[in-house]
Image (spheres, rainbow, N blue to C red):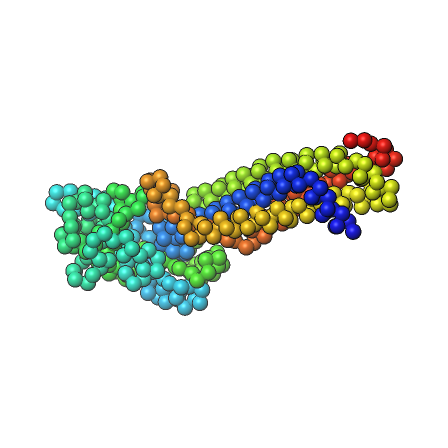
Length: 412
């Protein structure tokens, strides 16, 4: 009975009800759209970080990440790799030799990071082939091949097939060493790589030049389920405790980026909270005005036997009904915006014509789409619904406090 009365009361003043519905639906739809865009951005930033650091999990010699001098070596890398690959949660493992040195010709030199890899392994982590502008990612046509960035190629004035001397320090005795390499590919570097781009060589070639033997600098792990990274990291730390190895998750390797994401999430919640407070205050005022306009009606209900509790409940039910209608419309708007973003997205690089880099992680290819997180959307919906319904408590209390005799004598 109260439900029928509440529904009819909503449409006695269509203008007021429509304004409330528009306010709720637009703010709620905007919140869902913002959640989708933000969640996708966080995923993209996480994926870019995983690509930049070399995996969901990283295994190094003890102390490498704090001071990457190159002296920390993962010995018996093949044995360590086989052990890790036997874990069912691990999708791929890549062995890498990482060093810093000079790439030079007779006329110029350029500093950079030297990265010895196995091409088949690396494809699961950072597929350089996607960024190639010339040549190949190890074509097999040349001995001692090297793949360099466009910036380095321009500085050294070299092209495919040209010779480049790589100078570094041997990890076994610290002596300066040189190796003659031939340019096999040139790739487009990302933000933050100008002048310090990665130079890719074959793993065994850089092991020989830098004196690693059968050791490596890093084992990168890619997991089937990223959410298990902390669990797997703890297990590996226990297993490798006697081998002077450190195991890091990608977020432990780049804590600055994690802090940025957490700050942005907090800002998003604050922004949504401010919008909803404004909406709720407006709805509270609207409901209170509606109660004051219906004094005689409320007095009549009291005279007919409706209890103060029933009168208050009627106001709350009205609010819940208008909120449900508005949120249904808002969900349609937010979900439509989500689908549009999934299909088309927003290319930030094209709009601003800039490259974005944070803590060494390149975001220059970032195209914003949307990701629907069912848990976040559900929790957000329930919180907003409850928050708006709470706004009806004071108007409902005022209505329930009206004395029937005084209310019946009220004239509009």
